[in-house]
Each structure stands twice: as structure tokens, then as C-alpha cells.
Length: 136
Image 1 (spheres, rainbow, N blue to C red):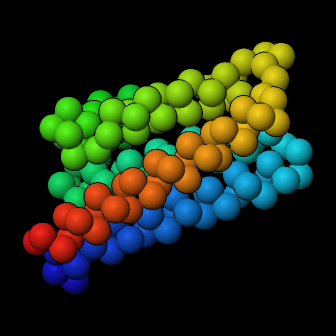
Image 2 (cartoon, one colour):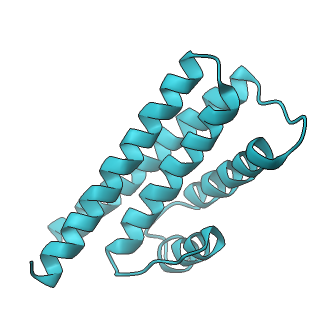
């Protein structure tokens, strides 16, 4: 497989994975599992960010590294909205609190907000990727 084909396959895989994680977040939400729903919402956002990084063959083994690269290469130049940066930061914070915070309770409303944030984030990333692919 040629390098360009591998890159496109990776981008497609990560976007599909982000969509699957979003679906899992919705399924968990509907079952009343708000903590795990927040976790899946974050990973939907995180995976979509990694799909966008793959367009420039960038990645990091750390969550903070992915977010830093995302901000540096896409938010700062204006390719992606500043709101997207805020969404990923907030989602990361909620995911960490939900996963590691003793006695941390995620409300139904906040879990729903995180799902909506993930939907919005993924839509924006998909639009940016399509725009980049059509200009290549």
C-alpha cells in the first residue's frame, strides 16, 4: 500500500472509530450510565482529533501531546475553531474526573452536553478533513 493510501486509510479508520465511540456514548447514556458515557464522548473527540492529526502525519502517545499538536497545527492557524479546543479540553477534564475522581457524579444533563459536544467536534473535524482532501 502506498504511503498516501495508508494515510487515507488511517484517517478513515480514526473517523469511523470516533463515530463508534460516539454511538457507544449515546448507548451508555440511554442506559443511565453517565460516567461511562462521558468517557466515550471524550474518546470520540480525542479520536477525531487524531484523525485530523493524521492528515499531516502527526501523532503523540500522550493525550496532552495530541491536544497540544491539535492546538498548534490546527487551532492556532485558524483551520479549526477555538471552540473545538475548548471542547476537547473540557471533555478531557470531565473524562478524568469521571474515571478517577472518587465520588464524582456526572449528571444526566452534563453527559448529554458532552455527547452534543462530541457530535459538534466530529462534524467540524470531518468538514476540515473533507476540505483538505478536496484541495489536494
